[in-house]
Length: 268
Image (cartoon, rainbow, N blue to C red; front, top):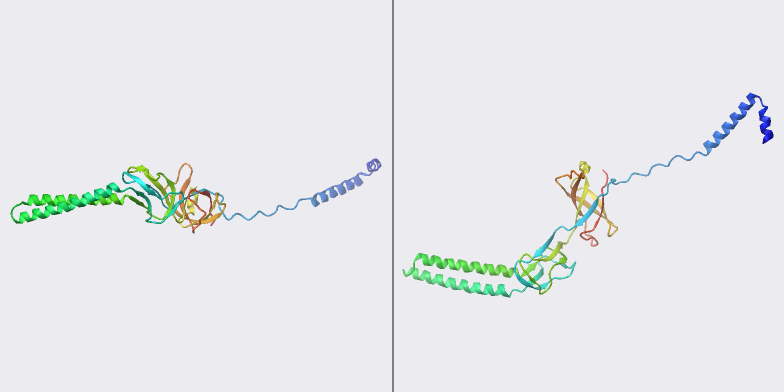
């Protein structure tokens, strides 16, 4: 190597330039040969918008059944998650007192009607006046109203299901005493579940009722089809979002109210 350098030292300037040129060409050629391949093409854009808002499953209808009178629970349809049909008896109370009141009211109605008939005969004989007949007729109406009230109270001795559904919470037990207004059972309706979620308000440019989307539920790990049912009439100014309501398409026995996940909306 030392001899080669010494030899190059005595080369003419023109020859040294030629050697340097060859060296640069060699280095450049090697660098070009080692240049990495061009960056691969970007992956195909996702078919969904970037935002994936959280979604909550809620029942179509839900309510809390309450007692309408002071009574003792005689029988109750117990068991969390128990299914029932529309019109089925869920709670039955001890109706001894209302039944007795109805018997008294019936006897009072019968007595009042007999008294009215007697007053009307006396009036025909000029032995009673119109005022007495009117008072007798008022007693009949009063007794009839008391009988109607007794029938209503007896009707409240049974709590019937307003729609088909399931029990989600039980507040009372058998033989427990209740008063008017005490909660008895919390129930939810059967059928497709509704969805609640908040989406960016800028989506209003294309989002409307009837738009289809997809939900992925955390508890099941599955995806389900859904559609937008309604949009709120007001945008939340603080979060720049709007609440929407949707419905899950089809029957899915593995879905329960209270489950949550994410919603995925397709691009136009």
